[in-house]
Image 1 (cartoon, one colour):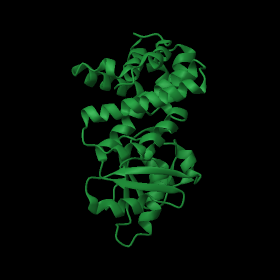
Image 2 (cartoon, rainbow, N blue to C red; image 1 turned 90 degrees about the horizontal axis):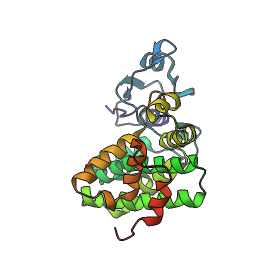
Image 3 (cartoon, helix red, strand yellow; image 1 turned 90 degrees about the vertical axis):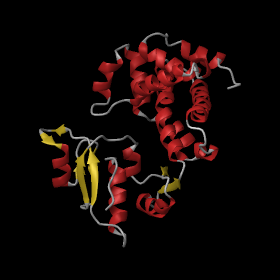
Amino acid sequence: MLCGARSCPWNARNVGRNVMNSQTLDEKVPMYVYEEIVDGRKLTEIINTTHMNAKYMPNFELPPNIIPCSVLVGCNLPYELAHDHFAEGTVGCRDQKYYRVLHDIFKSPTFRVVVTEDADCVEICSTLRNIIAFAAGCSDGMELNENTKGGIIRRGFLEMLQFVDVFYPGCRMGTFFESCGISDLVTSCYANRNRKLAEAFVKTGKPLSELEHILIPGHEPLGPVTAELVHHMLKKKGLEDKFPLFTCVYRICTGDYPLHRLVETLIKAREDM
């Protein structure tokens, strides 16, 4: 039996369809869902009875073989995917015997899938991009130009490379140029809840804790959380100065740095990482 690791509605719909057409997989696909109350009903109950995710994608029906269970939900851009616009993804799996089945259950005519054994790099790229997306949102909130956002993406990508090299040696350089790396990073800096949160943080001056519940209820914005965790890792090795953008985002989130330090960081950052 195949289990859906997250309740992304588009992934659930796509996986459900592919599994129904498979000759080798059990037709039933459990989907793990963070339990929430929507209009007085449990979200799992709504999905089980209506085959729709009433909160996050209310207008798209899930296949009947999708069965929700309860755990945390991940993040993506579900509406673009649900409308069958082109997208691509990277699956990290250390066991090559599962490559084909993973590829086949996620693929669709408009969704390109690459499976790699470089699972650590895939996951770390997905995590670190939240810090950079937050920085991009700060730039948007300050109404800086696109060149500045481009500089944030470039610098952030460099620090992603260096962070993985320091803490996860042995990862493949090519993985950064798959969709989990540069593609996801760029998309996140333009259409990510961390970007949205940071923009509102700058424009309203309200605390992050307050904005989280207003802008993205039911989700935890991973930019500030990731920035804090990464900062602790860097501090243990005395590497804060080697990762100026990551450090700057952390200190903006804690209130230790004013917003203008973001541009100063881009100007003064050393390239000999």
